[in-house]
Every structure is written in structure tokens, then in C-alpha cells.
Length: 175
Image (cartoon, rainbow, N blue to C red; front, side, top):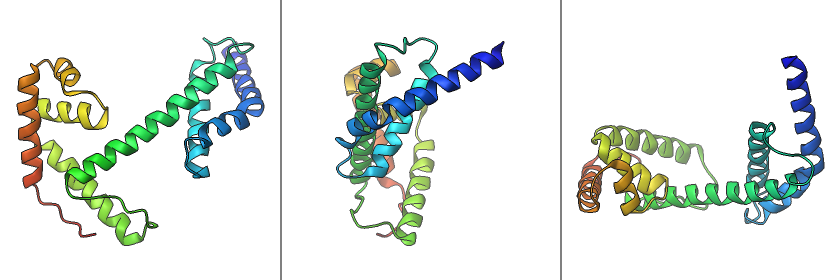
């Protein structure tokens, strides 16, 4: 019985993909600034989300608007993640160049990510959580403070001391 439900779900997903993939891609490409690969990745992510929601959606009338809404959200969330990453890199005197990636640049970026991960690991749990909420999740200081369970003033002090600690960390790569 479960094999039949699984096959039905796969068939529904395949049919939805055949019918709506071009539409979802057209929504995503509007956000992509000409980057077809990025738009294709976002399109695939939308259909992965559809796979997770197959049992709860009605696939007749509400699918196309649902796909559009999910596609827009997927694109906006990825653009926000990129923007946060840029802000974080600028905070430490780094920036991603628009030039094509070279093997040396890729190695340097990986070293920076490893160094940042180690540096974050030396912060207190509250500092890590606070920085993650603000710089990676896009929360305001006030909202992040509530989620961490501290006052806004305490959150401000935690953020400032965390940034000062991170600024003292050795950053190896030269770009």
C-alpha cells in the first residue's frame, strides 16, 4: 500500500514538474540578473518543497499560485542569504569580487570560512546565537534579543564584544 502511495506521489510530482517547471523558471529568472544556473537551482528547490507538501496541497486549482509564491520566497531568501554573506565579509575587510573564481581564490575563501567557523566557536553560545540571528537570519537586534532571552541593551553589548573578539582573530588569506 505505501509503495502505491509513494509511486502516486512521484507521478504527481513528475506531472507537476512537466506542467509548471517553465513557469517557475520564468518567475525565478526575473530575480536572477541573467544567471540561468541560479534560476535553475531555485526552480529545483521549489519542486523539492512541493515534494514535501504533496500530501497537503490540492493539485488542481491552487498549485500554480502556490508555486509562484514559493518561487518568489525561494529567490528572495537566497538573495538575502547572499546579501548577509556580503555584509559579513565586508565586516572583516573582505569582499567577493565579480571576477571569475580561480583555484587560488577558492582556496582562500575556504580558509576564510574555516577561520570564521573556528573564531565563532570561541564565542559564547549567546554571542554565536545572537550573531547568527542578526547576520545570517536577518533578525533585528530587538528580535534577536528576544529569541536569545536577553534585553536589547544586553544583546547590544554581547554583539559588540563578539565583533571585537572576531576582529582580533587572525585572518590568513590574502586576496
